[in-house]
Length: 125
Image (cartoon, rainbow, N blue to C red):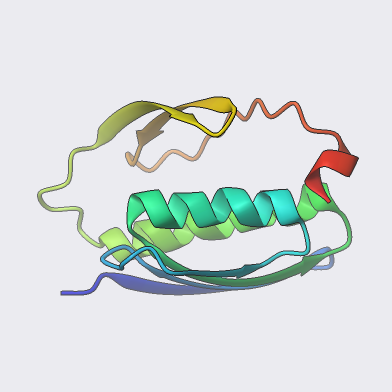
């Protein structure tokens, strides 16, 4: 059984096409125009064993990253369906490259995000 979702979002600031398969193999085709963001999304796909196909453009990096996150959350919710047999909350601490990622996820339905990424715009290009 493949749990799939397709999300399209078009606003004055962004245009996003996303396909997510949460029963995938880690394949990732991502093009946001922000190389570091593309890298981070590729790692989510690879280590989460999701397939992500994403094409996204925007008027600035802030709007683009924000709207991609909205689309990913919506796609994950749609792909999970009724969430039967799914643990509602989980967390992980992962050392990767020269960073330590700490992640906590709650799929209870109340959207909220805190990101602490000390990047400048030059780092993200």
